Length: 157
Image (cartoon, rainbow, N blue to C red; front, side, top):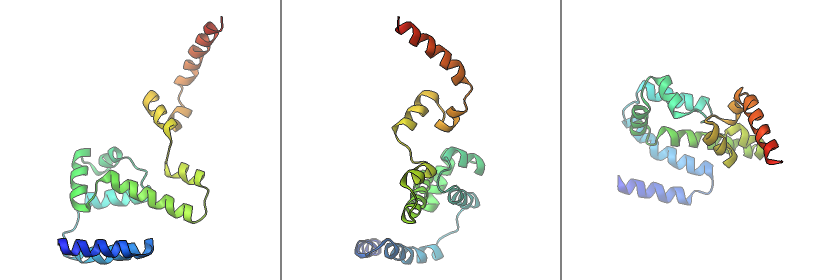
Protein backbone atom coordinates (compact mmCIF):
# COMPACT_ATOMS: atom_id res chain seq x y z
CA UNK A 1 0.00 0.00 0.00
CA UNK A 2 2.80 2.43 0.90
CA UNK A 3 4.53 1.82 -2.44
CA UNK A 4 1.25 2.40 -4.31
CA UNK A 5 0.76 5.66 -2.38
CA UNK A 6 4.31 6.79 -3.18
CA UNK A 7 3.87 6.08 -6.89
CA UNK A 8 0.54 7.93 -6.94
CA UNK A 9 2.14 10.87 -5.14
CA UNK A 10 4.94 11.01 -7.74
CA UNK A 11 2.43 10.88 -10.59
CA UNK A 12 0.36 13.65 -9.03
CA UNK A 13 3.42 15.88 -8.66
CA UNK A 14 4.43 15.19 -12.28
CA UNK A 15 0.98 15.93 -13.68
CA UNK A 16 0.95 19.14 -15.68
CA UNK A 17 -2.64 20.21 -15.11
CA UNK A 18 -5.56 19.75 -12.75
CA UNK A 19 -7.23 17.57 -15.36
CA UNK A 20 -4.17 15.30 -15.38
CA UNK A 21 -4.08 15.23 -11.56
CA UNK A 22 -7.73 14.21 -11.38
CA UNK A 23 -7.09 11.47 -13.95
CA UNK A 24 -4.20 10.14 -11.81
CA UNK A 25 -6.35 10.26 -8.68
CA UNK A 26 -9.23 8.52 -10.42
CA UNK A 27 -6.95 5.78 -11.77
CA UNK A 28 -5.50 5.22 -8.29
CA UNK A 29 -8.84 5.22 -6.50
CA UNK A 30 -10.99 3.28 -8.99
CA UNK A 31 -9.64 -0.17 -8.01
CA UNK A 32 -10.20 0.61 -4.33
CA UNK A 33 -13.75 1.70 -5.08
CA UNK A 34 -14.48 -1.51 -6.96
CA UNK A 35 -12.96 -3.66 -4.20
CA UNK A 36 -14.32 -1.65 -1.29
CA UNK A 37 -17.56 -1.84 0.57
CA UNK A 38 -20.46 0.38 -0.28
CA UNK A 39 -21.20 3.42 1.82
CA UNK A 40 -24.18 3.75 4.12
CA UNK A 41 -27.25 5.21 2.40
CA UNK A 42 -27.11 8.12 4.86
CA UNK A 43 -23.52 8.89 3.89
CA UNK A 44 -24.42 8.74 0.19
CA UNK A 45 -27.39 11.05 0.87
CA UNK A 46 -25.13 13.46 2.76
CA UNK A 47 -22.72 13.53 -0.18
CA UNK A 48 -25.53 14.22 -2.67
CA UNK A 49 -26.87 17.04 -0.45
CA UNK A 50 -23.39 18.57 -0.28
CA UNK A 51 -23.13 18.49 -4.05
CA UNK A 52 -26.64 19.94 -4.49
CA UNK A 53 -25.84 22.78 -2.07
CA UNK A 54 -22.51 23.41 -3.80
CA UNK A 55 -20.82 22.79 -0.46
CA UNK A 56 -22.74 25.47 1.41
CA UNK A 57 -24.76 23.22 3.71
CA UNK A 58 -23.82 23.26 7.39
CA UNK A 59 -22.79 19.94 8.93
CA UNK A 60 -25.30 20.37 11.76
CA UNK A 61 -28.15 20.82 9.28
CA UNK A 62 -26.92 17.89 7.24
CA UNK A 63 -26.78 15.63 10.30
CA UNK A 64 -30.35 16.61 11.15
CA UNK A 65 -31.52 15.79 7.60
CA UNK A 66 -29.78 12.42 7.76
CA UNK A 67 -31.23 11.69 11.18
CA UNK A 68 -27.88 11.26 12.91
CA UNK A 69 -26.05 13.29 15.51
CA UNK A 70 -23.32 15.58 14.23
CA UNK A 71 -20.74 13.32 15.88
CA UNK A 72 -22.17 10.18 14.23
CA UNK A 73 -22.21 11.82 10.79
CA UNK A 74 -18.66 13.08 11.31
CA UNK A 75 -17.44 9.60 12.27
CA UNK A 76 -19.30 7.52 9.68
CA UNK A 77 -18.76 9.96 6.81
CA UNK A 78 -15.07 10.26 7.66
CA UNK A 79 -14.49 6.53 7.87
CA UNK A 80 -16.35 5.80 4.64
CA UNK A 81 -15.39 8.79 2.50
CA UNK A 82 -11.87 9.44 3.76
CA UNK A 83 -12.45 13.02 4.83
CA UNK A 84 -14.71 14.83 7.25
CA UNK A 85 -18.06 16.26 6.14
CA UNK A 86 -16.76 19.78 6.72
CA UNK A 87 -13.67 19.20 4.57
CA UNK A 88 -15.80 17.58 1.85
CA UNK A 89 -18.15 20.58 1.83
CA UNK A 90 -15.17 22.96 1.68
CA UNK A 91 -13.72 21.10 -1.30
CA UNK A 92 -17.05 21.08 -3.12
CA UNK A 93 -17.54 24.79 -2.44
CA UNK A 94 -14.01 25.57 -3.62
CA UNK A 95 -14.41 23.44 -6.75
CA UNK A 96 -17.65 25.19 -7.66
CA UNK A 97 -16.15 28.64 -7.06
CA UNK A 98 -12.97 27.82 -9.00
CA UNK A 99 -14.98 26.64 -12.00
CA UNK A 100 -17.09 29.81 -11.92
CA UNK A 101 -13.95 31.95 -11.78
CA UNK A 102 -12.40 29.99 -14.66
CA UNK A 103 -15.59 30.59 -16.64
CA UNK A 104 -15.01 34.35 -16.31
CA UNK A 105 -17.49 35.26 -13.59
CA UNK A 106 -16.76 38.24 -11.35
CA UNK A 107 -14.64 37.30 -8.32
CA UNK A 108 -16.87 39.40 -6.05
CA UNK A 109 -20.02 37.70 -7.30
CA UNK A 110 -18.42 34.25 -7.05
CA UNK A 111 -17.25 34.98 -3.49
CA UNK A 112 -20.72 36.05 -2.44
CA UNK A 113 -22.46 33.15 -4.17
CA UNK A 114 -19.99 30.62 -2.74
CA UNK A 115 -20.38 31.99 0.75
CA UNK A 116 -16.78 33.11 1.08
CA UNK A 117 -16.77 35.92 3.59
CA UNK A 118 -14.44 38.28 5.33
CA UNK A 119 -13.94 39.30 8.95
CA UNK A 120 -17.06 41.48 8.97
CA UNK A 121 -19.17 38.34 8.47
CA UNK A 122 -17.47 36.73 11.47
CA UNK A 123 -18.14 39.86 13.55
CA UNK A 124 -21.83 39.74 12.69
CA UNK A 125 -21.94 36.07 13.70
CA UNK A 126 -20.05 36.82 16.93
CA UNK A 127 -22.17 39.75 18.05
CA UNK A 128 -25.57 38.88 16.61
CA UNK A 129 -25.36 35.10 16.55
CA UNK A 130 -26.87 35.01 13.06
CA UNK A 131 -25.70 35.52 9.49
CA UNK A 132 -25.63 38.96 7.84
CA UNK A 133 -28.63 37.91 5.74
CA UNK A 134 -30.61 37.22 8.92
CA UNK A 135 -29.52 40.54 10.42
CA UNK A 136 -30.82 42.34 7.35
CA UNK A 137 -34.37 41.30 8.22
CA UNK A 138 -34.00 41.26 12.01
CA UNK A 139 -36.78 43.15 13.83
CA UNK A 140 -34.54 43.82 16.84
CA UNK A 141 -32.48 46.30 14.83
CA UNK A 142 -35.28 48.87 14.69
CA UNK A 143 -35.46 48.88 18.50
CA UNK A 144 -31.69 48.77 18.88
CA UNK A 145 -31.32 51.73 16.54
CA UNK A 146 -33.31 53.86 18.99
CA UNK A 147 -30.97 52.89 21.83
CA UNK A 148 -27.87 53.80 19.83
CA UNK A 149 -29.40 57.11 18.76
CA UNK A 150 -29.95 58.05 22.43
CA UNK A 151 -26.37 57.19 23.36
CA UNK A 152 -24.99 59.18 20.41
CA UNK A 153 -27.07 62.19 21.46
CA UNK A 154 -25.75 61.95 25.03
CA UNK A 155 -22.15 61.72 23.82
CA UNK A 156 -22.52 64.92 21.78
CA UNK A 157 -23.50 67.04 24.78
